[in-house]
Image (cartoon, rainbow, N blue to C red; front, top):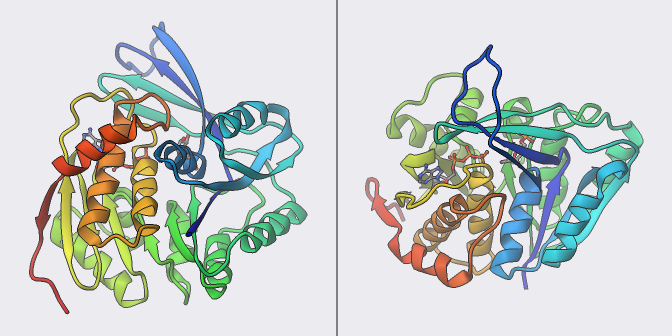
Length: 316
Ligand SMILES: Nc1ncnc2c1ncn2[C@@H]1O[C@H](COP(=O)(O)OP(=O)(O)OP(=O)(O)O)[C@@H](O)[C@H]1O
Ligand SMILES: O=P(O)(O)OC[C@@]1(O)O[C@H](CO)[C@@H](O)[C@@H]1O
């Protein structure tokens, strides 16, 4: 059976503050607040666990407030392989207002070079031939910008497949390397940052994806918020979308999509089945606060409803 490992080097406790509307420079009275243990790899693990997929979550946690993560791992039977370091994991502020979310993500812990080397080695040691490894999120201070490039090389040399979901320079460094991840899931802004230009049409997004595929990426999934997502391989391009009936929180929708891709890959699903499951996971998560999925049957019903449009002709 495929082993799934998620790495979150910079996890966060997401503090979601409910506001009627956001007016910069004004005093706001919040109508509520909620706390969820998060960070991209943690969210992916959480959604996979809801789907019934065994998952190992690793990364770096501050010992001071690790309890909130430990409670999640225990409740969802997620194998906890996190390194503990001195200090507290960051809290990220999510302002929920006017039907959208404004994110204020803090920098996180300062990591020593010894702990950086330890987490690198521990992560590589968790992977073997049939392992899918999700590398997710930003990097805390002290971790080299090219760590995802190095991890991708070391993990894929062991026969694992890497799915990378990050942004900014860590993404750029990983995509400039000689060994590229098996799969990436950028959103439009993340792909634009890497490409160094605006990508405001499907054609330009697909072209950017094809350039990465020519250099070794197998699957590029570009998430486009309410507009759905593009799933691009060397053989085909699919657009997948499903209007959301209810949006409780968009935080972690991209992570739910990554979880859906991983669930599909671990069943050797084809491209259309992967696009369907990934979109169903993301849409299902929108109904939940925090990175949680509803019952499997609800996700399966959504899966059948996902609208798939083929873009262009398939290639052999
Ligand atoms: N308002 C919405 N209506 C319908 N589907 C949505 C909406 N927002 C997100 N989705 C679904 O979730 C997927 C991922 O969302 P998005 O593109 O916002 O990810 P992201 O930018 O990586 O987000 P995050 O970093 O918060 O996880 C989309 O491709 C889409 O399928
Ligand atoms: O600062 P990063 O690591 O890029 O993103 C962190 C984060 O925004 O990602 C998740 C949503 O995708 C949240 O749980 C978390 O707060």
